Length: 126
Image 1 (cartoon, rainbow, N blue to C red):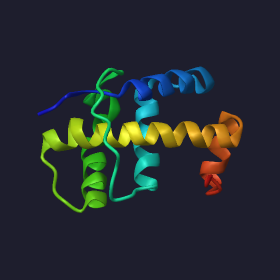
Image 2 (image 1 turned 60 degrees about the vertical axis):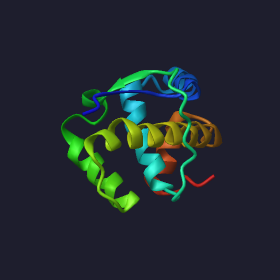
Image 3 (image 1 turned 45 degrees about the vertical axis):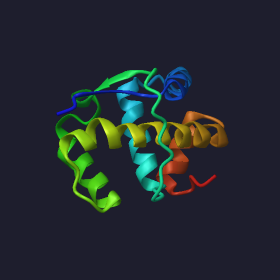
């Protein structure tokens, strides 16, 4: 069973920028990235097999909500995933994709406070 994943270098760079703007740690950014990726789910996710980014441990990303993350991703993907498929494979795909969505929405919003208000009000479309 996979307990670690490495993001792409692009995601690492995005997380560094997001950390500077939001003061959130990578594990929190990863949770938001997964959520944004799932919210804007498309069947095909461009997979970046680059693993030169941050190392994220499963426990710090999914924690005691691991089964919930896995179940939602299985539901979205419409297939049952093995533990190794879920983490690191599918989790990495959604973290990498979600990081791009996150930074784009934050830039569009202008600042973190407006980003949160837009997300909470449902006005987060770019």
